[in-house]
Image (cartoon, rainbow, N blue to C red; front, side):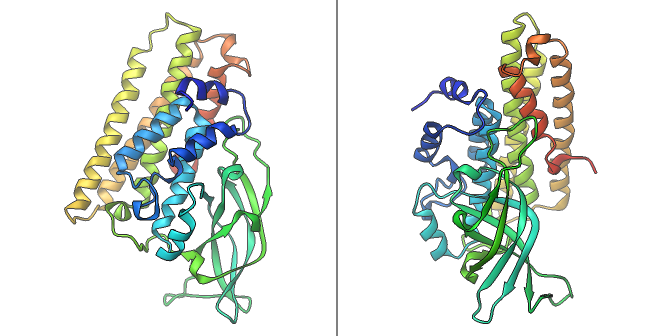
Length: 335
Protein backbone atom coordinates (compact mmCIF):
# COMPACT_ATOMS: atom_id res chain seq x y z
CA UNK A 1 0.00 0.00 0.00
CA UNK A 2 1.31 3.42 -0.93
CA UNK A 3 1.57 6.04 1.82
CA UNK A 4 -0.02 9.49 1.37
CA UNK A 5 3.47 10.91 0.82
CA UNK A 6 4.19 8.36 -1.92
CA UNK A 7 0.81 8.94 -3.57
CA UNK A 8 1.37 12.69 -3.61
CA UNK A 9 4.77 12.20 -5.22
CA UNK A 10 3.29 9.89 -7.88
CA UNK A 11 0.53 12.41 -8.65
CA UNK A 12 2.85 15.38 -9.16
CA UNK A 13 2.69 16.53 -12.78
CA UNK A 14 0.74 13.55 -14.15
CA UNK A 15 -2.16 13.78 -16.59
CA UNK A 16 -3.81 10.56 -15.40
CA UNK A 17 -4.01 8.75 -12.08
CA UNK A 18 -1.33 6.00 -12.16
CA UNK A 19 -2.52 2.39 -12.25
CA UNK A 20 -0.92 1.53 -8.89
CA UNK A 21 -2.97 4.24 -7.15
CA UNK A 22 -6.18 3.20 -8.90
CA UNK A 23 -5.55 -0.40 -7.83
CA UNK A 24 -5.21 0.75 -4.21
CA UNK A 25 -8.43 2.75 -4.50
CA UNK A 26 -10.24 -0.34 -5.79
CA UNK A 27 -8.77 -2.51 -3.02
CA UNK A 28 -10.10 -0.08 -0.42
CA UNK A 29 -13.37 0.31 -2.40
CA UNK A 30 -13.09 4.09 -2.03
CA UNK A 31 -15.16 4.65 -5.16
CA UNK A 32 -17.99 2.86 -3.38
CA UNK A 33 -18.05 4.75 -0.07
CA UNK A 34 -21.73 5.63 -0.64
CA UNK A 35 -22.77 2.28 -2.15
CA UNK A 36 -24.90 0.32 0.39
CA UNK A 37 -23.35 -2.72 2.05
CA UNK A 38 -26.08 -4.93 0.59
CA UNK A 39 -24.50 -4.29 -2.82
CA UNK A 40 -20.93 -4.80 -1.60
CA UNK A 41 -20.09 -1.14 -0.99
CA UNK A 42 -18.79 0.46 2.20
CA UNK A 43 -22.10 2.14 3.03
CA UNK A 44 -20.41 4.85 5.09
CA UNK A 45 -22.17 7.50 7.12
CA UNK A 46 -22.01 11.01 5.70
CA UNK A 47 -19.34 12.32 8.08
CA UNK A 48 -17.16 9.23 7.53
CA UNK A 49 -17.22 9.68 3.77
CA UNK A 50 -16.53 13.40 4.02
CA UNK A 51 -13.41 12.75 6.12
CA UNK A 52 -12.10 10.33 3.51
CA UNK A 53 -12.71 12.80 0.67
CA UNK A 54 -10.96 15.56 2.64
CA UNK A 55 -7.92 13.35 3.29
CA UNK A 56 -7.54 12.35 -0.36
CA UNK A 57 -8.08 15.90 -1.60
CA UNK A 58 -5.31 16.98 0.78
CA UNK A 59 -3.02 14.42 -0.85
CA UNK A 60 -3.85 15.66 -4.36
CA UNK A 61 -6.63 17.82 -5.79
CA UNK A 62 -7.23 15.84 -8.97
CA UNK A 63 -7.33 12.60 -7.03
CA UNK A 64 -9.77 13.91 -4.44
CA UNK A 65 -12.00 15.42 -7.11
CA UNK A 66 -12.10 12.19 -9.12
CA UNK A 67 -12.94 10.20 -5.99
CA UNK A 68 -15.66 12.66 -5.01
CA UNK A 69 -17.44 12.80 -8.35
CA UNK A 70 -17.12 9.09 -9.16
CA UNK A 71 -18.19 7.96 -5.69
CA UNK A 72 -20.98 10.54 -6.00
CA UNK A 73 -22.07 8.95 -9.27
CA UNK A 74 -21.95 5.51 -7.62
CA UNK A 75 -24.45 6.92 -5.09
CA UNK A 76 -26.99 6.27 -7.86
CA UNK A 77 -26.72 2.59 -6.94
CA UNK A 78 -29.49 3.53 -4.49
CA UNK A 79 -31.73 4.71 -7.35
CA UNK A 80 -31.31 1.60 -9.50
CA UNK A 81 -33.55 -1.42 -9.32
CA UNK A 82 -31.99 -3.78 -6.74
CA UNK A 83 -31.28 -6.64 -9.13
CA UNK A 84 -29.41 -4.27 -11.47
CA UNK A 85 -27.46 -2.66 -8.62
CA UNK A 86 -26.45 -6.08 -7.23
CA UNK A 87 -25.38 -7.22 -10.67
CA UNK A 88 -23.28 -4.14 -11.40
CA UNK A 89 -21.66 -3.68 -8.00
CA UNK A 90 -20.76 -7.33 -7.53
CA UNK A 91 -17.64 -6.16 -9.39
CA UNK A 92 -15.49 -4.12 -6.94
CA UNK A 93 -14.16 -2.08 -9.87
CA UNK A 94 -17.57 -0.82 -11.01
CA UNK A 95 -17.31 2.93 -11.31
CA UNK A 96 -19.97 5.33 -12.59
CA UNK A 97 -19.28 8.77 -13.94
CA UNK A 98 -21.17 11.24 -16.03
CA UNK A 99 -22.59 14.66 -16.56
CA UNK A 100 -25.32 16.52 -14.73
CA UNK A 101 -26.39 18.27 -17.92
CA UNK A 102 -29.30 17.20 -20.12
CA UNK A 103 -27.39 16.45 -23.27
CA UNK A 104 -29.49 14.14 -25.39
CA UNK A 105 -32.63 12.14 -25.98
CA UNK A 106 -33.95 8.68 -25.20
CA UNK A 107 -36.45 7.64 -27.86
CA UNK A 108 -39.02 5.11 -26.71
CA UNK A 109 -39.14 2.04 -28.94
CA UNK A 110 -42.08 -0.23 -29.66
CA UNK A 111 -40.64 -3.09 -27.56
CA UNK A 112 -40.21 -0.85 -24.52
CA UNK A 113 -36.51 -0.10 -24.88
CA UNK A 114 -34.96 3.33 -25.41
CA UNK A 115 -32.62 4.52 -28.16
CA UNK A 116 -30.13 7.02 -26.73
CA UNK A 117 -28.36 9.77 -28.66
CA UNK A 118 -26.53 12.86 -27.46
CA UNK A 119 -23.42 14.69 -26.32
CA UNK A 120 -22.49 15.32 -22.69
CA UNK A 121 -19.67 17.44 -21.25
CA UNK A 122 -17.39 17.28 -18.21
CA UNK A 123 -17.62 13.65 -17.14
CA UNK A 124 -14.92 13.11 -14.52
CA UNK A 125 -12.82 9.94 -14.18
CA UNK A 126 -13.25 8.68 -17.74
CA UNK A 127 -10.09 6.48 -17.83
CA UNK A 128 -11.33 4.59 -14.78
CA UNK A 129 -15.07 4.34 -15.46
CA UNK A 130 -16.98 1.16 -16.19
CA UNK A 131 -20.25 3.01 -16.93
CA UNK A 132 -21.54 6.44 -17.84
CA UNK A 133 -24.60 8.03 -16.27
CA UNK A 134 -26.49 10.53 -18.39
CA UNK A 135 -29.64 12.64 -18.40
CA UNK A 136 -31.97 12.70 -21.38
CA UNK A 137 -35.32 13.97 -22.58
CA UNK A 138 -37.78 11.19 -23.32
CA UNK A 139 -39.22 11.28 -26.83
CA UNK A 140 -41.53 9.09 -28.88
CA UNK A 141 -41.99 9.32 -32.65
CA UNK A 142 -39.76 12.39 -32.59
CA UNK A 143 -41.88 14.28 -30.05
CA UNK A 144 -41.17 14.99 -26.38
CA UNK A 145 -43.08 12.86 -23.90
CA UNK A 146 -44.85 15.15 -21.43
CA UNK A 147 -45.94 14.62 -17.84
CA UNK A 148 -49.38 15.47 -16.45
CA UNK A 149 -48.32 19.13 -16.10
CA UNK A 150 -47.26 19.40 -19.73
CA UNK A 151 -43.52 19.41 -18.92
CA UNK A 152 -40.90 17.37 -20.75
CA UNK A 153 -39.98 14.17 -18.90
CA UNK A 154 -36.29 13.83 -18.01
CA UNK A 155 -34.87 10.40 -17.29
CA UNK A 156 -31.39 9.22 -16.27
CA UNK A 157 -29.71 6.10 -17.67
CA UNK A 158 -26.65 3.97 -17.02
CA UNK A 159 -24.78 2.69 -20.06
CA UNK A 160 -21.58 0.71 -20.49
CA UNK A 161 -18.49 2.80 -21.17
CA UNK A 162 -17.98 0.69 -24.30
CA UNK A 163 -21.15 2.21 -25.78
CA UNK A 164 -19.81 5.77 -25.62
CA UNK A 165 -17.34 7.71 -27.74
CA UNK A 166 -14.83 9.58 -25.58
CA UNK A 167 -13.87 13.14 -26.56
CA UNK A 168 -10.65 14.12 -24.66
CA UNK A 169 -11.14 17.90 -24.68
CA UNK A 170 -10.07 19.07 -21.20
CA UNK A 171 -8.08 22.31 -21.62
CA UNK A 172 -8.20 23.91 -18.16
CA UNK A 173 -5.10 24.96 -16.24
CA UNK A 174 -5.69 22.51 -13.40
CA UNK A 175 -7.36 19.23 -12.41
CA UNK A 176 -5.48 17.65 -15.30
CA UNK A 177 -5.41 14.15 -13.83
CA UNK A 178 -9.15 13.98 -13.18
CA UNK A 179 -9.82 12.46 -16.61
CA UNK A 180 -12.64 14.93 -17.23
CA UNK A 181 -13.81 14.60 -20.82
CA UNK A 182 -16.92 14.87 -22.97
CA UNK A 183 -18.63 11.80 -24.37
CA UNK A 184 -20.98 11.07 -27.24
CA UNK A 185 -23.62 8.34 -27.60
CA UNK A 186 -25.10 7.26 -30.92
CA UNK A 187 -28.06 4.89 -31.27
CA UNK A 188 -27.42 2.88 -28.13
CA UNK A 189 -30.38 0.72 -27.10
CA UNK A 190 -31.04 0.45 -23.35
CA UNK A 191 -33.77 -1.34 -21.43
CA UNK A 192 -35.86 0.53 -18.88
CA UNK A 193 -34.16 -1.44 -16.08
CA UNK A 194 -31.07 0.70 -16.64
CA UNK A 195 -32.95 3.95 -16.14
CA UNK A 196 -33.45 5.76 -12.84
CA UNK A 197 -34.95 8.86 -11.26
CA UNK A 198 -32.86 11.01 -8.88
CA UNK A 199 -35.34 11.19 -6.03
CA UNK A 200 -36.71 7.65 -6.21
CA UNK A 201 -34.85 5.10 -4.08
CA UNK A 202 -34.95 1.31 -3.77
CA UNK A 203 -32.89 1.26 -0.57
CA UNK A 204 -33.97 2.28 2.90
CA UNK A 205 -31.29 4.40 4.51
CA UNK A 206 -30.88 7.86 6.01
CA UNK A 207 -28.52 8.85 3.19
CA UNK A 208 -31.37 8.37 0.71
CA UNK A 209 -33.19 11.25 2.37
CA UNK A 210 -30.35 13.77 2.26
CA UNK A 211 -31.28 16.55 -0.19
CA UNK A 212 -28.99 16.46 -3.22
CA UNK A 213 -28.06 20.12 -2.74
CA UNK A 214 -26.69 19.44 0.74
CA UNK A 215 -24.84 16.33 -0.46
CA UNK A 216 -23.22 18.30 -3.30
CA UNK A 217 -22.36 21.27 -1.06
CA UNK A 218 -20.66 19.21 1.63
CA UNK A 219 -18.81 16.77 -0.62
CA UNK A 220 -17.41 19.56 -2.81
CA UNK A 221 -16.54 21.73 0.19
CA UNK A 222 -14.26 19.11 1.74
CA UNK A 223 -12.40 18.99 -1.57
CA UNK A 224 -11.68 22.71 -1.42
CA UNK A 225 -10.62 22.38 2.20
CA UNK A 226 -8.30 19.49 1.41
CA UNK A 227 -6.66 21.41 -1.41
CA UNK A 228 -6.34 24.49 0.82
CA UNK A 229 -4.61 22.42 3.52
CA UNK A 230 -2.24 20.99 0.88
CA UNK A 231 -1.53 24.47 -0.47
CA UNK A 232 -0.54 25.62 3.02
CA UNK A 233 1.91 22.72 3.38
CA UNK A 234 3.55 23.47 0.04
CA UNK A 235 3.69 27.21 0.77
CA UNK A 236 5.58 26.55 4.00
CA UNK A 237 8.15 24.49 2.13
CA UNK A 238 8.89 27.47 -0.12
CA UNK A 239 8.81 30.06 2.67
CA UNK A 240 9.28 28.31 6.04
CA UNK A 241 9.06 31.57 8.00
CA UNK A 242 5.66 32.50 6.59
CA UNK A 243 3.07 32.54 9.37
CA UNK A 244 0.09 30.55 8.14
CA UNK A 245 -1.31 29.62 11.54
CA UNK A 246 -4.46 31.71 11.11
CA UNK A 247 -5.07 30.20 7.66
CA UNK A 248 -4.61 26.67 9.00
CA UNK A 249 -7.05 27.41 11.83
CA UNK A 250 -9.57 28.73 9.30
CA UNK A 251 -9.37 25.47 7.32
CA UNK A 252 -9.76 23.42 10.51
CA UNK A 253 -12.71 25.49 11.73
CA UNK A 254 -14.57 25.25 8.41
CA UNK A 255 -13.97 21.50 8.25
CA UNK A 256 -15.25 21.10 11.80
CA UNK A 257 -18.46 22.97 10.92
CA UNK A 258 -18.95 20.95 7.73
CA UNK A 259 -18.72 17.73 9.76
CA UNK A 260 -21.09 19.21 12.33
CA UNK A 261 -23.57 19.89 9.54
CA UNK A 262 -23.22 16.25 8.41
CA UNK A 263 -23.90 14.95 11.92
CA UNK A 264 -26.84 17.32 12.37
CA UNK A 265 -28.41 16.28 9.06
CA UNK A 266 -28.19 12.55 9.82
CA UNK A 267 -29.49 13.03 13.36
CA UNK A 268 -32.46 15.01 12.06
CA UNK A 269 -33.31 12.43 9.41
CA UNK A 270 -32.94 9.53 11.86
CA UNK A 271 -35.64 11.23 13.93
CA UNK A 272 -37.90 11.07 10.86
CA UNK A 273 -37.84 14.83 10.56
CA UNK A 274 -37.71 16.77 7.32
CA UNK A 275 -34.74 18.89 6.22
CA UNK A 276 -36.35 22.23 5.46
CA UNK A 277 -35.23 24.60 2.73
CA UNK A 278 -34.03 27.05 5.41
CA UNK A 279 -31.39 24.55 6.58
CA UNK A 280 -30.38 23.82 2.97
CA UNK A 281 -29.91 27.55 2.37
CA UNK A 282 -27.94 27.92 5.61
CA UNK A 283 -25.50 25.20 4.59
CA UNK A 284 -25.17 26.49 1.05
CA UNK A 285 -24.51 30.07 2.14
CA UNK A 286 -22.01 28.89 4.76
CA UNK A 287 -20.04 26.95 2.14
CA UNK A 288 -20.34 29.69 -0.47
CA UNK A 289 -19.12 32.44 1.90
CA UNK A 290 -16.29 30.41 3.38
CA UNK A 291 -15.12 29.22 -0.02
CA UNK A 292 -14.80 32.88 -0.97
CA UNK A 293 -12.76 33.54 2.19
CA UNK A 294 -10.48 30.60 1.45
CA UNK A 295 -9.91 31.79 -2.11
CA UNK A 296 -8.93 35.32 -1.04
CA UNK A 297 -6.54 33.95 1.59
CA UNK A 298 -4.89 31.60 -0.92
CA UNK A 299 -4.36 34.48 -3.33
CA UNK A 300 -2.83 36.62 -0.56
CA UNK A 301 -0.47 33.79 0.37
CA UNK A 302 0.45 33.10 -3.26
CA UNK A 303 1.48 36.74 -3.72
CA UNK A 304 4.12 36.20 -1.01
CA UNK A 305 5.71 33.02 -2.40
CA UNK A 306 7.88 34.46 -5.16
CA UNK A 307 8.89 33.08 -8.53
CA UNK A 308 9.31 29.51 -7.31
CA UNK A 309 5.56 29.29 -6.93
CA UNK A 310 5.13 30.09 -10.64
CA UNK A 311 7.29 27.18 -11.85
CA UNK A 312 4.93 24.93 -13.75
CA UNK A 313 6.65 21.82 -12.37
CA UNK A 314 6.32 22.92 -8.74
CA UNK A 315 3.88 21.26 -6.35
CA UNK A 316 2.51 24.56 -5.06
CA UNK A 317 1.72 25.70 -8.60
CA UNK A 318 -0.18 22.46 -9.27
CA UNK A 319 -2.25 22.85 -6.10
CA UNK A 320 -2.94 26.51 -6.93
CA UNK A 321 -4.15 25.61 -10.44
CA UNK A 322 -6.20 22.66 -9.19
CA UNK A 323 -7.91 24.75 -6.52
CA UNK A 324 -8.87 27.65 -8.78
CA UNK A 325 -10.01 25.30 -11.54
CA UNK A 326 -12.19 23.36 -9.09
CA UNK A 327 -13.76 26.56 -7.74
CA UNK A 328 -15.20 27.25 -11.19
CA UNK A 329 -17.67 24.41 -10.65
CA UNK A 330 -21.16 25.83 -11.07
CA UNK A 331 -22.28 24.68 -7.63
CA UNK A 332 -20.82 27.68 -5.77
CA UNK A 333 -20.62 30.30 -8.50
CA UNK A 334 -22.65 33.31 -7.42
CA UNK A 335 -25.45 33.92 -9.89
